[in-house]
Length: 434
Image (cartoon, rainbow, N blue to C red; front, side):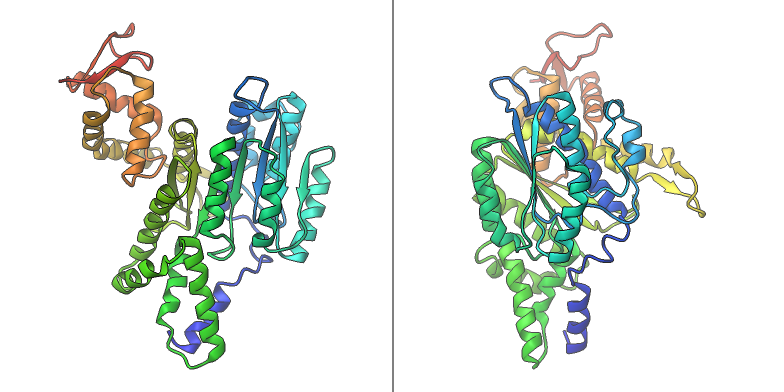
């Protein structure tokens, strides 16, 4: 990498937010829809008066930004189609960023007297932090939230953790590029959530990871450039874990000429290491793309949970599958109409059902030798194939049921009892044929 290339890359990797918050991009809209749905599901599952529930739930946004965009899309139509959100006059807008979405969720839960959603927002940049405060004040009156002073996340993190008060927590970390989150912080969050329930959502920026590794190829005598390259590589090592440079540096040398292979390796390395070294009981991923034809995702969501059956197998799997479906809505040339590519979507679903069937049979041989409810079996299949490298949302739960019904018809699985249509229902027990 020459000095000219270094100068370009340093500028390209800038964490300037002015342009970012001018208009919401499609991948940000996808991220916001997912968080909106998950906060609702999480609070409805864990918020309440039952013995396993809490009257207080935390939401932590570690890189909150301004809280809103100048222009946006992807929320108003989505909310308008929801019977739940129609019940509340909380005015979710396309321009809302994750902080305002969380606060408006908190308002809905307050109206229901269901749960108190305590929101914690961190933003390091002074000017952005001030705009965040102003935007939160405009919608957050009477709500339980805090905007921390404009310090680095590293400095704010211990204070956030000390104020969670043992309540279930959803943590959302969307750092710009690679800088800002360390593997140690991820493990600390895992320690807390292992005791108090909740999930961590972390954005893994695929191209930024590869770009940071590329600084290993620096060919410069400029001390400033060399120091900057060292810093960028150090940030990558901090994210992937202590001494991870002993692994990623030789892997970069091996994969640097193969498009996307290093970032895919790095994501798998990152996920596997979290699974081994943290107290999370499950780690799963989902690729966020801009178009259904994209071969390279903008980034991947890494979700870490201590109750994967509910979080992954039930909630997030179908949330992510729905996001895949939304990629098949395309605008016309004048951006006036959005058409749904029904045939292309159906073709993908059917192709995936064929692709996954043999893998499901292998899973069945391992996990369904005893009677198990079909509904529970679907959850186990989703969790097992995610451990084998499949992302959540590959298919919906209903699609997995269709596959299992076909396997019943082929006499690959048997049912203890049947429903009225002479086929196993979700509540009927099944097992693989001996």
